Image (cartoon, rainbow, N blue to C red; front, side):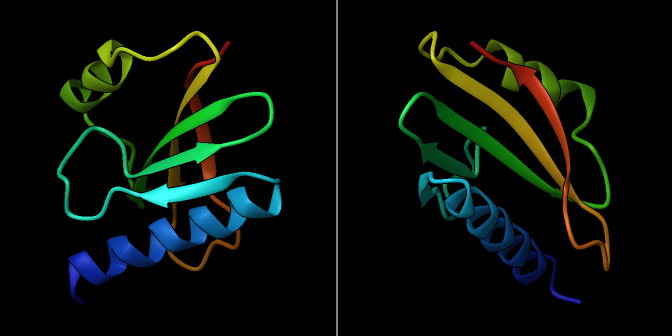
Length: 95
């Protein structure tokens, strides 16, 4: 299976989930940055890293924690396991 295509699918599933909760989303495609999705809602902003089947490693988690963000920003990881209808969500920081 093409890992890049699988990653794209998980990002679009997370975008659909966030948009159903009222967020407007943008995808940081091919940026190789810390976060895959920026979701803007009426009361907060979510920065989301998407993963398939595993959580980020310790270095990646530290990069997420250390990323400078405004006080109304939630940093989260969405882990999509194969054939799972909803992601496991780990909130790293929240307002």
